[in-house]
Amino acid sequence: MSEDVLFQLNGVSKHFVRGKEEISIFDNLDMSIERGDFLAIMGPSGSGKTTLLNMLGGVDQPSGGEIHFDGSRVDNLRESELTRWRAHNIGFIFQFYNLMPMLNAARNVELPLLLTKLSRAQRRVSVETALALVGLNDRARHMPNQLSGGQQQRVAIARAIVSDPNLILCDEPTGDLDRKTADEILEMLQLLNREHGKTIVMVTHDPEAARYAKRTVHLDKGRFEQREVAA
Amino acid sequence: MGSLFSQIATVTVMNVRSLPRRLWMSLAMVLASAVVVAILLAFLAMARGFERTMDGAGSEGTAILMREGAASEINSVISREQVNLVEASPGIARDAEGPLVSPELYVIVDGIKKSTDSEANIALRGLNARGMAMRENMQLLEGRLFTPGTNEMIVGAGVLREFDGFAVGDEVRFGKNVWRVVGVFSTSGSAFESELWADVKVIQSLYDRGSSVQTVRAKLENPGDLAPLEKTIEQEPRLNLEVQTEQAYFAGQGKQLQYMAIFGRVISFVMALGALAGALNTMYTSVADRAREIATLRALGFSSFSAFCGTLAEALVLAIAGGLLGSLAAFLFFDGLNASTFGGSFTQVVFRFEMSPDLLLQGAWLALVIGFVSGFFPAWRAARLPVIVAFRNAA
Ligand SMILES: Nc1ncnc2c1ncn2[C@@H]1O[C@H](COP(=O)(O)OP(=O)(O)OP(=O)(O)O)[C@@H](O)[C@H]1O
Ligand SMILES: [Mg+2]
Image (cartoon, rainbow over all chains, first blue to last red; front, top):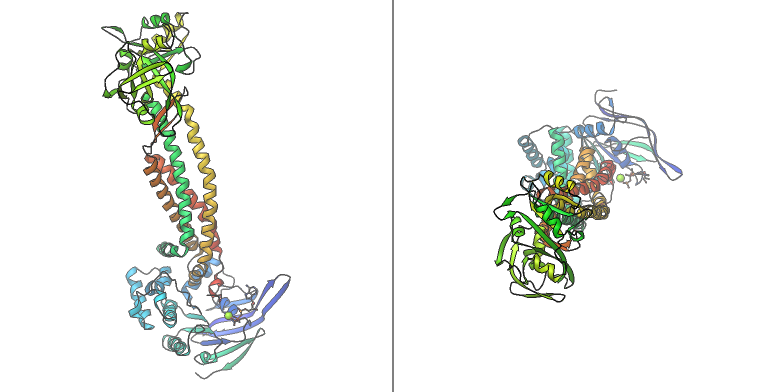
């Protein structure tokens, strides 16, 4: 296994049992994601993109096979270990932002830092840095419902990066935004990938969005079809 | 562990701030706990007040003698001859005028209650000046004492409060007898305040009692020391009497009303079950309402324990708010409230509801139990909520 491999999936399968029938989403899927990659996952609806992303993020378990992160197995960790692993390594960005409606922008961004040993003052500095990075310093005291969709997603990005995780997982991060705003968000992700060395895995329906990634995989009927995309 | 604490604190703050989204359900839970706590406290305060009234009535320094087997004053008869024998007994305090002994009569008359406008029993006690002096906490609030040998009476403050037609100067008719109220007395809230007092000799003649009485009270030489009197009774076959301190007598009467406290607890328990069902519903709804937020936090790395604690804390906050509200309501409405109930002899005993910190503590415990139980199971569900809920596409 190469030094540069962050994620390694070996023979991963996933099936759901619905009533009497068993639905297989993947069977024997192999995949590796390198450190510093910006990977777009595309594919038709129902092809299992979200399911795959969830397994990478440790919020869903494969039915078979192994997932290695940074050289160690993570698919068999206990729930509490997975939770801690997520807190250290992963930043999530959701299609619908998933901000806490009763916390202001700064408090939302601060959430992942509550899981660290940082002092209040250290947390404030980190929150300010992250908000500055997404260009929302002046909105720190705003509540989510006082922000536009694009601004909310930027707060969510700040939240995803504030604790400096290696990996950012995004599920349709621009699915709910107009073209112009979507491009701003995607540029921001690209910046995080290029300048800050974050590994990014992004699920999207939008070919325009996929163009910001370093490479795109197409998931269909449980298999990958790989194409390199010039960024 | 500082991290765990800040997780729990944040989740709790968020839950509490999101309460307005579930305003009516949350208010319903607060109100239900408030009602249950208020009812429990009302019953406990009533039982406490009644007990206090009965306890306060009796003195350790006074012996009360009744016929053997008479459970209360109303059932007892004592002859003049027996009174004389008691007066001669050792162990009784004496002054220049002789032994401090009070032969007393106790008859039941009717009065009209102000609150219900219906008839209720009142005790009319016949006694003499020595008997009145024996009630050390007795105070004349208004008017004067009755003149011996006349149809005059004085009324307890509780009777004045609860019944119509006993103001000073009023004429009161019981059967064929007409009495005049000449004074009002208090005995610091004890059961005597629920009585009417008149000259024992006048009552003997009006009620055809000859020279007999019902009870004899005797001031003890040494408070609490009944031994000399007991010895006299034992050695004198004509004295088929029982002796106890007045305090023991009233305490025994008060115990009969202990069922109020038990009844109150049973009622509160049943109502608490109802409140609990509602509270569980509220809290399950809260978990469903916050599912996306809980799952998002879990995805960010918050522990399932913090989701558990946050939900439990929300339930506790609501139930305790209810408990405080209920206590406040109970305190405002019931503390010092006058009530009357049947005393030992089916006469009305007037007493005050008595709230106290230890009762409020019992209310607080009840609220805590409601909060804990109604929070625990929904909190369990919150902790077990699958994290992928955060990724579902429904906004
Ligand atoms: N918990 C579940 N139980 C049963 N089937 C499930 C479950 N979760 C997902 N599926 C099924 O697995 C398949 C893949 O779902 P997934 O959400 O990963 O698709 P997707 O590629 O993200 O689709 P979309 O582009 O619409 O978001 C779908 O057919 C879905 O119905
Ligand atoms: Mg999806």
